[in-house]
Image (cartoon, rainbow, N blue to C red; front, side, top):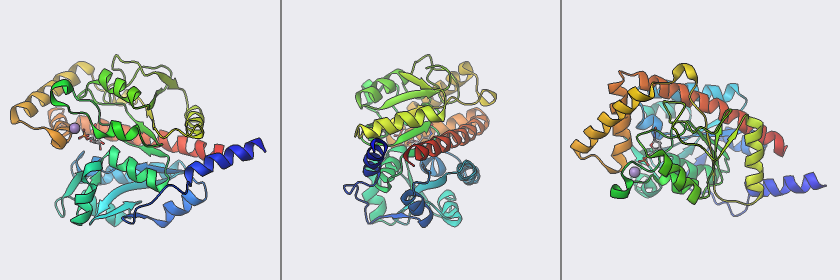
Length: 328
Ligand code: PSU
Ligand code: MN
């Protein structure tokens, strides 16, 4: 009886009558069926495809990530905008159309960009913020990404704080990432997440918050979880409380792919100086820094990038599977 009540409560949250799906959002049949039948689904963002990596690495990476999610027993739901239609779950051709930006360019789409991209029937790579908005409408609770946007260094002067953080504060979705890059101010980012009511934990054996390319950042997450089962339990209780804020699980990059912190910091400083000299700001700054870092590391940062997206997809799928088990 008690268990039934809890389950009913939990499902109510998922399939709340209040959850409105926009007519611009098209959920593919496989994802729709999985959600209806309490099968694990993992949302995947697409700015990483359109603005985070060059073609064809981006396409290979996106396909591999989807493959990993399937191997782990979950259904991948890559979210992107194709000719103004917001898709949840892409076909192989759609993925290729999106990734090959030489055929049709794509707009980096965050919350503020939706109307424009839809009205002009453009392609859009959805940021973490935009993917959260769509995942929430679709009822997807677990989402894997590479890196999250955050509070930029010198934000006190530039006001540059990613919309990702605010969206995570109002989306009941668990995001699995490799922490945030040290192109950002990590302590300020963690403070901001706390203000927004976002649960933050490292996945591993301690609270050391990872800095994307490196396993350490010198900052501590408020909590850590040792495995997917623990994470799923926390997610379940968080949602049962009716909280509408999200959760962030930071997975440190695997040791074999870790890059030297000293070398990385020097490269990031150089990339940031070059961005400053060129006067790059706003939505262009993150993609610019990513491409500079990739060039300055002669592609090895790209390799690391791909390694941790795959690892995050693996962990996210395990969490999604456990979460469905708790509901079942
Ligand atoms: N940081 C990364 N890799 C990325 C991004 C950020 O290390 O690919 C992308 C994500 O899609 C994220 C977006 O949601 O950039 C944040 O952009 P901005 O900093 O402009 O908010
Ligand atoms: Mn910004």
